[in-house]
Image 1 (spheres, rainbow, N blue to C red):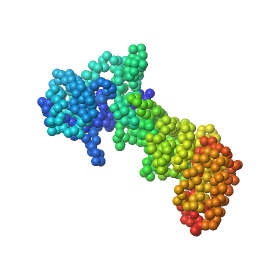
Image 2: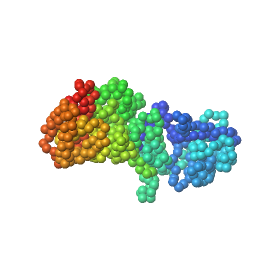
Image 3: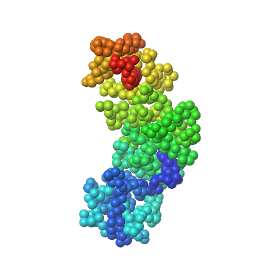
Image 4: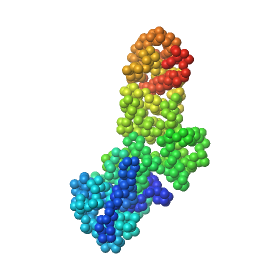
Length: 594
């Protein structure tokens, strides 16, 4: 189903005509130089095709005869283009450049034998006369050109030799002859067509081999069954193999304008839509991109809020957002590297409206007040909260890889968040004592969704709830109040607060920690009574009212209660900060006063 959807997407791109998608038999590759030949095959110039971006030059994407994944130990040239080790026999990395150039020369001389096209004749004459030693002697070449990809152009013409009609016909004939011996029923199209022995490489997946990787691959004798080897085990036509890999490489391209590619943990995610018309499909893709990675622009953010509000109220209409046109389906594919192959981390396909509803539920479950963000956080930012925090900063490579895929699937499929998400969050907060707003919001999302899916009335509060008697939530509030008393008595410039020293133990084994903290708090209150008596009275009152909600200190808290502990701590701490932002009434109205 994945390959069929990708092949259909390729046909849509080809039909639209507005895409740079490659024609059958071609692929878009990064080309740095063009060798300019005269009619006799002599080299007259080398054109630098690289494009400048900032202060750097980058190869130009060009449509050339399709590349393929070269065998690990063999030598196999591309047609009418290649890197310098094949084209010229020189390289700064390859130890067999002479063999690679010989294969390139012999393959092309055999292919071009008897041609009457001026461009192809010039190429044949160049290869017949060229020697690798001429690279160092020629004024047209520089050492920086080594290992770059090169194409050919006939002097006086703008196009490249591989685009000449005679070259296209030659490539087509060569392909037909190679495929004549392998025909069968294609699993993707259902048609009787030439079958692909090897599929084109898929490039652009983070962490995968730079030469490309495969989704469909059989490369060991153990995979041979009933005499069928390699691609014959899963018969897919050359046409369909080219279509699905070309579409996927188009989605995976590293282009600042590519808005259909996301990185979520170790998974590279691509998405595309199918609809009654191309405009509706593009609108759905744009909407989904905005929902997955909300913009900072105020107008766009408000638009998304309106869309989600309408979806929740079952009032979504295409005239309000064309991305919600009935019948529009969205396809989402998550890929992760796995040696020379690619793992399917997840594959989801459904009506666009249903995906929008699930994202609306996700943002509702995540809702926490006061909000720890100005705009909804994208999924990659949420995942960073599951990584260790060092000085308030986390690295994407520290995100648990399986958790990223499970969390994405839960959000987009509308299922329960993985239990491991809450486990990791609690573990991180106990280890690094960073009880950030995003971590508290994720704890709240896990617990809120679980409560909703089981029709329970135990969902954590969105904002501070002083009447809530959940033991974990109350203990979190109490811990924040005790920290407030410490800060008020000793000042904000402490080397370590009780959060830095006791948060992990207080959230897991309250009975062993809170009596000690309460005794220490009496010392802090005694100091405050001398300097700020009114503040001491208010803090002591808050602590007393909070303790009254408890039925003693439990010996231990379950993981769910530890999640509520973080939510209660966040709510109470933010309430203190909110009050601090208000103008003080007198010299005694400062930290923590109500």
